Every structure is written in C-alpha cells, then in structure tokens.
Length: 47
Image (cartoon, rainbow, N blue to C red):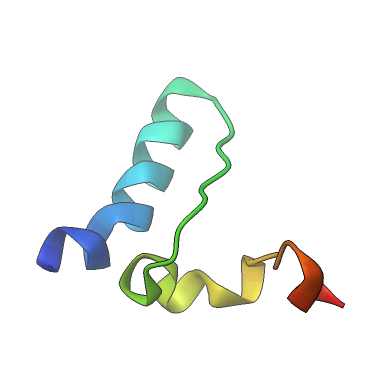
C-alpha cells in the first residue's frame, strides 16, 4: 500500500512540527523501509 511507504516520513514531519517523539511497532517492511537502520528487534530472535 502506498500509504505505508509514506507513513514514517509523514510521522516524522508531524513529530517535528509539534515536538514529540514516537515509538512505532510494525511487521510491515514497507513502513520500516529506509528507516530499517533505526529498528530494534524485540523478543527471542533479538539476540
């Protein structure tokens, strides 16, 4: 879905405008996209 590809960029713009931080949990590679370097894996496979 195209909205998933824009989601993180849109969220960052909104967060910058209103000065808040976010945590996003997703299974969608389209949402993670170019932000994959900032991902933290959780759970048993995180080791």
